[in-house]
Structure formats: structure tokens, C-alpha cells
Length: 296
Image (cartoon, rainbow, N blue to C red):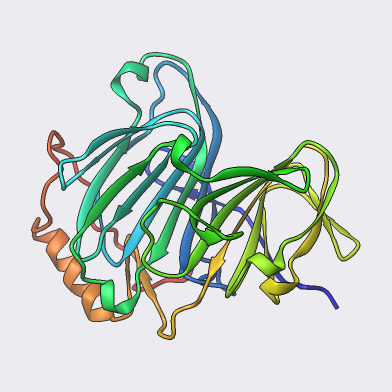
């Protein structure tokens, strides 16, 4: 019997002036463990007059994880942080009761040709921490556990797995793992995983249960403990998951919560400009006119 319960393809989505491939949420699978949202940005070749510009927008009830393969993004938030995100680094922002941030091409790259490629991820917070004080952490590539095992390169970007722990300060049991191989390799890693688990193919391909799967797909496992597959040459995959929450999570725009009243309050606070402003920013993203809690 196949260990793949669901296959999710990227769907195009617009995040302002930039198109991305949306992976989660999906109508038949809203979350994988605590992971509530994943966008694949690019790869996009941007000319000297094209830039990423996402003005200040709010979040509640989640942590955002930005992980770049190519390019740079300037992150500014209402806590006063102003950081350039570069490839291999982890940008981890926990919104808790509320935070606003902007994402833009850095000034020194705005008049040059450049590339942008990466993942943007939301991890929902446990119910007891949904209203915690917002926090921000930036972790350099050199601080992230990385090793070679069974002829593949493994990086533990966030969480715990393989007896190792990432310095990224997560708030529930989870894992986000990069696996790269230049040669054909068979992997059996289920003993290192727990909870719900999914595999995203960035490049190359994998074989599982006699089927070939190519890039821009998420494969949802029936049982994380049975995670076994063959990586083709020059393949990069990301394994993510963890223990699911006992309560349902509702998503409206950039707000995630176990209680719709928290979302309604956040909507009103954004309309009333009660979120702390982002220093140096004058623009903002207006509250969208969309159906409440619409499935995407």
C-alpha cells in the first residue's frame, strides 16, 4: 500500500506585485502538523526596475519562517527590527498578539538585475501562546545544524530531528529539514520523524512506490514512520511536519487563530490602525475584501 495519502501541486497566487506558487493551505489539507501556509517564491529574474515591495501588513497567532535560496529581502517590523535576509539564513518572526512587517528588495539592489527564490512559511502557535508578546529572531546559516549522512547532505532548519536541534526558537514539536543529493540514493528516514509529515520537491525528483514525482509537488505521508523514498541525481527536497494541534485553526488573510473572535478583533485593530507602525514605513496593505475564512 502506498504511503502517500495526498499530492498537492503549486497553484499561482499574487502577493502584491509578485507571483508565487502556493502549496498550503489546500482545500483537502489545511495544515501539516503546525504548518499552516507555504509559498514558493520564484525563481524570479528581476530587472533593474523590478523589485519586491510588500508594504506593512499584520499577523497574529503564528510564526513566519523565511528561507531564501537566491536573492535578498529587507525585513522591517513593528518591533524595530531592520534585517537583510540572505540565502541560507532563517528569518523567524513570531506574531503572537500582533505584529506588522514589510518585505522589500534592499535599497542597494533596487537598480540592478537580481534573482529572488525561496520559501515563506507560517507555523501556527499553540493555543496557549496565540496571544504571546511578539518576538523576532534571525539565525545565520553557520548556526544551522548541517551534516552528511548516508551520502546525502542534511540541514535541520527548524525544530528537532535526527537527534539534533535547530537554534530557531520554535514553540511546538516540529521539524523542517533540507535534504540534498548529487547521486541516486535510497533513504529511509521515518524513524527520525513524528506526527504528520510531508515532502516538498524543490528540484530533481524522487521515486516512491514505483512512481516518479517531479518538482513543485508536496507529498503528504500516510504515516511519517514509513517515510522511505529514492532521490534521483541532483535532487533537493524539504521534509516538514510535526504534531498536529487538538483544535482547528482558522485563517483569514494574514491572521491565524483557534478562535474566530481573535481574528475579528485583529481585523478591526488593523482597520483602526491600532497595530504598532513599522519604523520608516508610510504605506500599508489595506484589509482585503474577501469571504471570511475562505478556503484557497
